[in-house]
Length: 262
Image 1 (cartoon, rainbow, N blue to C red):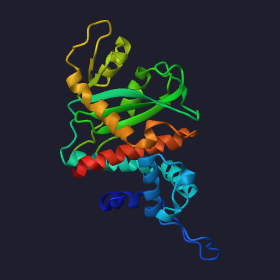
Image 2 (cartoon, helix red, strand yellow):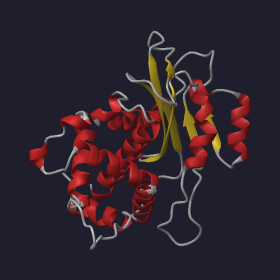
Image 3 (tube, rainbow, N blue to C red):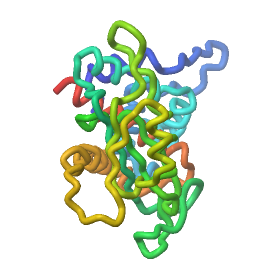
């Protein structure tokens, strides 16, 4: 469930758990087994309370609690940054361009960062916003309510791109250009993107399809599809937004790891 190479990168990032000698209590489930349980939920979308005990992952509550603790400690973000640095060192990041898009998912239990979807008969949902480099490797993701316009996450996503090391010189944070569909076609945002030293290539509203930008934008659509290959992300089951964001960040890291070892 957890490849050795991935575990070797995650283990040093996990918070240390001090042993209690005086009142040790119940034996702690090993972190790697708990991570297997978290990934099992991410892959299958099985409810936490139905996580099979015989698989040795610990209880669903143990896995849920550990996921939240590790997310709060910044484990998934640091893992993502580590993998991006390794990809950069291996010349597998295309900084000549980035691509951005958003996708709606239903949120059956509601919660923070949900809202009535304008594309799903006003049913409660959330949006996954993604920015990738030129080959579709995710650089950053954000979560909003289903009623938030895609363009509202344009600048937050650019700002969320971490400083990527892996090569000599200053870490890289900005792509040379940015591609997006017509939902992002606002002059004020074009100017703000240009002000960051990034050349915007946004499809124009009010013109016929066939701008030719689709040959660049398809990579982010593929990445969104890869994110939703993880069944726990196809529908938002979590009331707490931080738990869903933890799954999103972990899924991005898995996608990066697969591209690294490919």
